[in-house]
Amino acid sequence: GSTDDTPSKLATYRESRTQSVRQARAGECAAGMRGISLTRARKIVLLDADDRLYPDTCARYVNFLASNSTVGVAYGERTLIDEKGCRLGFGCNALLNKYPQGDVLETLLRRPFLSTPSQACFRREAVHSLEYKGPMGDWVLLAAAALTHKFAYAGRAPMVEYRVWSSSFLRSIARDSQ
Image 1 (cartoon, rainbow, N blue to C red):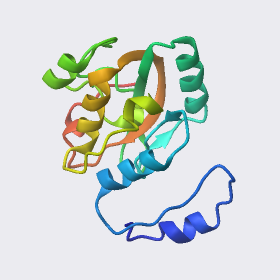
Image 2 (cartoon, rainbow, N blue to C red):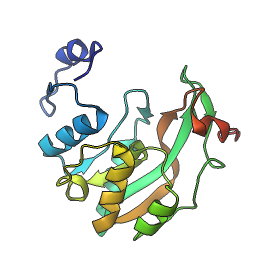
Image 3 (cartoon, one colour):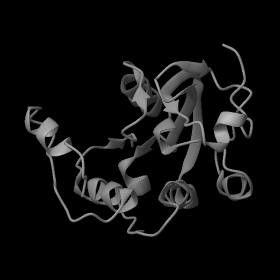
Image 4 (cartoon, rainbow, N blue to C red):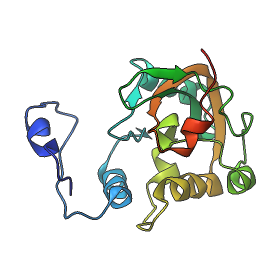
């Protein structure tokens, strides 16, 4: 459903473990849910087009989940970046909650502690059976995973650079220095 040049960019990318799938434009949530339903991967990291993972993020998540077999969702920090990709800060002061672990559903319902699902790595079974297609897909995805799976904090090293736009609510609380 993308309206930009994503299909032509993907056409030049050749990797045997990936596939490109087109569908009618139905929104980000529907695209994400479709991708989750099609994957055979045991661990899933969702990444918005304007955010960036650190080079070792996936390896750190895989190692963390291998060492914590009862955890369904591992999450970590994010570095805030502006529209141009310049760092605004590490994000410590922008955390909405301290690092909840285990059964986090009530905490998540009261006050979400992740800015984006890009901060998390989901075991496939934590999200694979979801069929939600409505608004607020990120929040619903996290809440649905929290219904049946434990969350764990994977440490202070940032996992993702999360882009905040000048009109973003997070921009007003991103004044921490690195």
